[in-house]
Structure formats: structure tokens, C-alpha cells
Image 1 (cartoon, rainbow, N blue to C red):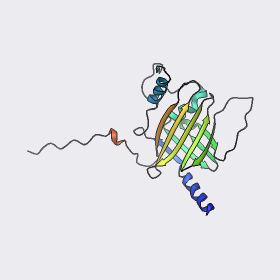
Image 2: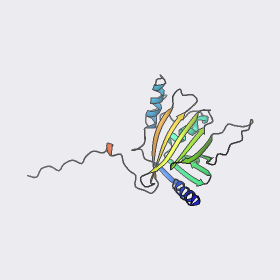
Image 3: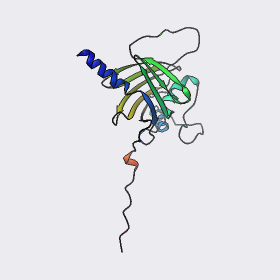
Image 4: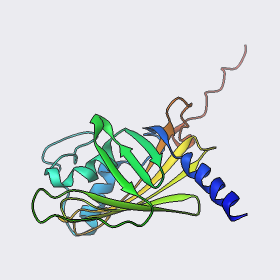
Length: 194
């Protein structure tokens, strides 16, 4: 019986694999969430003169993982248990394991992002230590008949005083995207017949 339940869980976990495209209508505005975190710490948001979507993207290479998670519009998930690989735009990848393995750190060389994950209650939980020394906590779950991926991101770059909390919704590539019904307006009534 235990083998059957493990096989079922493994199949459910594999449902996370595939190509995902951001659904802007259902996702949080990343820039607004960055501003919320700055204000929560008593700061004043300053996008350095940038306007529009992605105005807080960029910065030192040690903070690239935060940008990829919060701004990239595509995500490919490949699962080869216990290894999981996330590939973002421009081929940026991060690979991590769900079997509790540790890592070896070299005193020589460039710092690297480090992530590890685990499965529980139908969700994938991931924790990371980006190169800047901050942290992320992520929780991924499937919804809409496994055609949507919900990513709850909690990120704390080392230079931030407050946590940035973002929810991103991805549609499985090749499916019809869902829309936020709160943003839709009712159709106009037909003019009266004379």
C-alpha cells in the first residue's frame, strides 16, 4: 500500500513539470510589492528614474535570483526525482534537490545561489540563499486542473529591511489563460428598440 501511495505522489509531483507563462492579470504587481516592502521598512521608494513595469529590476549580479523569480515571464520546470531544475528567461537555471542532501562549499571561487526543496501536502516548498546572502522561501501549488501554477514568493535581499511578498500565477503553456474577473466590465446593454 505504501508503494502505491508513493507512486501516486510521484505522479502528482510530476504534474508540476512543464512550460509555464506568467498570467499578468492574476499575478501581483512586483514593483508595487517592492515598494510596499520599502515603505514597511520606513523608506521612500526610488526606482532611479525608471518608469513602468520592471522599474526595480536590475542591480548587482548577486541579486539576480530575486529578479528572475519576481520578473521573468516564463518558467520551465523539469523534474527528475530527486532533482528539480527551474529554467527562467534567457536560459538562467537553478537546480536543487528534494532529498535533503547538503552541499559542499569551497572557500575559493565565486559565490553561488543555493536552493533546496521538499514536497508536502501537494505543494513544492523551496528555500534559497542567493549570492548576496539574503534568503527566499517559495511555495508552489497547482490549481485550475493542473493548468495553473501558483507561486508564493517571500524574498529578503540582504539590503532590504523588510520581506518582499509576491504571488505569481503562471498558465501552463498551450492552455487558455484565465483572466481576473475583477478587472472585466459587464457588457453594455443593447440600446432600446424603437
